[in-house]
Amino acid sequence: MATRGIIGTNRQFKIGKIVCLARNYAEHARELGNETPAAPVLFMKPASSVIGDREMVHIPAYSQECHYEVELAVLIGTHASHVTADVAMECIAGYGVAIDMTLRDVQNQLKAKGLPWEIAKGFDTACPLSDFVPASAVADPHALCLKLAVNGLTHQNGTSSDMINRIPQIISHISAIFTLEPGDVILTGTPAGVGQVIAGDVMIAEIESVGCLTIAVD
Image 1 (cartoon, rainbow, N blue to C red):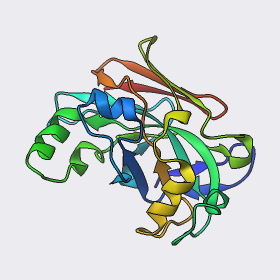
Image 2: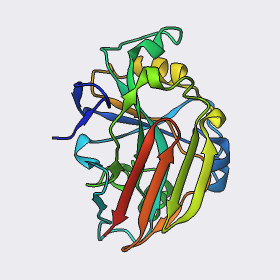
Image 3: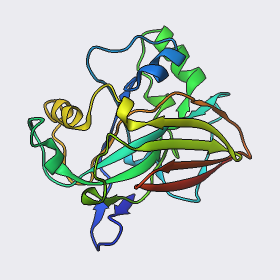
Image 4: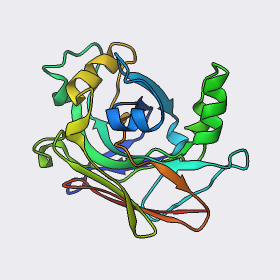
């Protein structure tokens, strides 16, 4: 059972469903040859995919191309159903750092066949996730620098100001489809610069004012 705390408090949350946005940064959509979506594109990861700082990603045998994607994670702290954008930020307990590990070859094969691609996104160890800073510690979640380095070389260096869909609209949209509950997590998309990792690599993901994750690859 994956749990995460709010740093500086005694609050602990059992991680529930992890709702993720695809193509929420225009440059990332373009680098993968995808159109910028008119509405949020959602997929989900199971809580069983979560690992923590200093743990290890295990690339499944059915993939030969595993990619990293650094993302700002939003921890839901209250029951939220059909919330409006103007009150959506009140549902947030904290912000964290996540890496959306993606089996790009598997994803592309399944997309080409018009099939779901959860097995490319939800495998065991596919969601490295930090603890969370309190929501009050982040003055503006749309003005944060996101970075990811592999073996000391920075590959992603973007800003959350480039999100296509902002967090209030994201929460409102999702909560109209899935009821959000305390411990649910939203991954808000990744900036450009994604790429492949292989066994022996070490990733360091950082988001200013939020935290850092160090993850090795097996």
